[in-house]
Image (cartoon, rainbow over all chains, first blue to last red; front, side, top):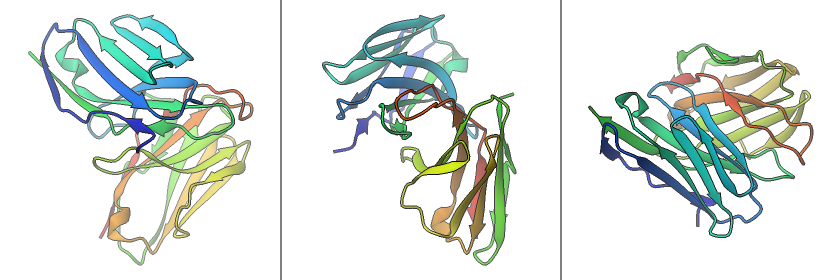
Length: 111
Length: 116
């Protein structure tokens, strides 16, 4: 079993839709959770960073962490064609420098 | 423009060549990382340096040799690579005082490496 599971997509939605991206994980020690956006031929760009459980909102983006279910989500409201990219989840724990990444979900927002 | 700069952006090298990838971070961070990104695979951690000391070597073949002369610069020296080493090589940095505390990692744009 992979430490982090993420549906590779592609996920196609119409402009203006609410997008839900998810990751599940197996290591209960993970405490720090990140979402990155990666455009084609570019490096990953940090979108959201959360510690432990709960929600965090930044503009159109909301990150949710449910540690009891080992499940994290990224919601994008009012999606735009410019949101079309690959979204990577990442997580880590105390006691290590290793960030574990999902494979990424490719999102296409259609105009 | 990110606070982490990688050069070159693209590199084509033969299997007998020796080349180096360079990374520089302008964020005042103390930890630096090399990751490998291949198609349809998660990012693979290769090396971690904290305060210039190597803290992780994720079973990387010896044809990849990292060097960290200071907290702002990181190199990846390449020699006798194989075609399967073709990938996007990403450098990242973070502020990690020690293993008990974390901040988010920031990435450079990557070097697209093709081994022919």
